[in-house]
Image 1 (cartoon, one colour):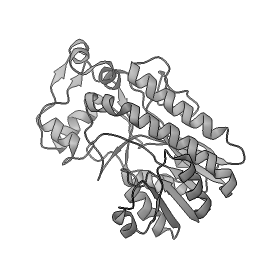
Image 2: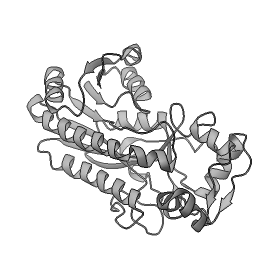
Image 3: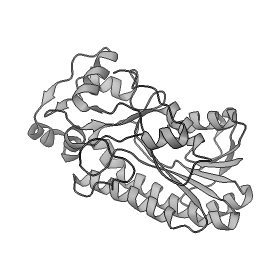
Length: 301
């Protein structure tokens, strides 16, 4: 297949290009600047176009005429902290929303039949047990979480309404592994060694992770699956007090400090409290069944 990836320079880009090339697909990578030697070395053909420039996107998609477009567009900070996430949120939303609009507008005329979109597998409504894909996104949460969930809802709804397109929503969990925040030697490893990431309250919020290579494998499998939403998450979602303590041990850090919800609210804000205490885990049963998805167990548990 001829495949165009928007956002190939992000965390999932490298393993995804490698996986698609190993499967003998022809891969093109949308990039804002011509400085894309790393992508070319991986086997992707760089295509210069700003995802926020509708005319440039339409021209690029029209020239390439891919069979599939994969939207992995983000604009996230280098560090995963409440302050930096808040500062980056507006730019990230703009890139995701406008990029999605511009890509969808270009699909029909170029004869593109399938569209894969990066979505979220960790912002589901409260309820018992793990959430499957039929559970709606959260609507009553902290301000940042509500805004993020609305963005994903908007992205998916717009793509679902595009005529003549087989649409797949890839609802990824928290990425971990090389090139992500969650590595022993990366940003989160540094933060836990500095005792900057506490267990908040009871730490009962349930996190769904996925190794970046497993996420890439599931994305490649989604080239031929039935349209719809898929939770791309590992099989053992863990409460914050469990995974964070285990991650600290794996990173050679002391046990994480514990703070009350009130203390965390003052120090880090309501979103941090929501994640640590109310987040709902997701089920990967559908992805296992439809994609043949067999993710590794969270490596530090």
